[in-house]
Amino acid sequence: MNKHLENAYYEICKADSLMYAYENTYLDADYSENDERDLRNRAGYLFYAIWDNIRTAKESLSLVEKESKK
View 1 (cartoon, helix red, strand yellow):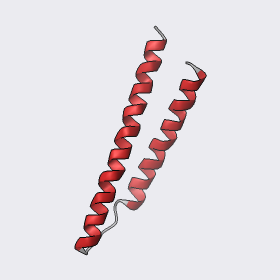
View 2 (tube, rainbow, N blue to C red):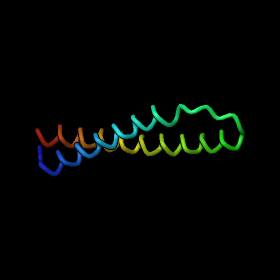
View 3 (cartoon, rainbow, N blue to C red):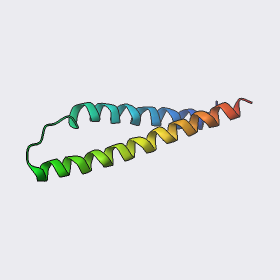
């Protein structure tokens, strides 16, 4: 695999791990007030939007790797 592709994939994997850790540490909080609950929901939506982008990039890199081996 191309060295730059390997580095990009490694960085994406690190970001994916950080997102997983953040999710399990901070998004399981219990909020009782409506304002806090709304804020938590927005933070959660943002979190998952970022994580979806990371996963999409990771999948794309995997496809590039497979195509480069042909």
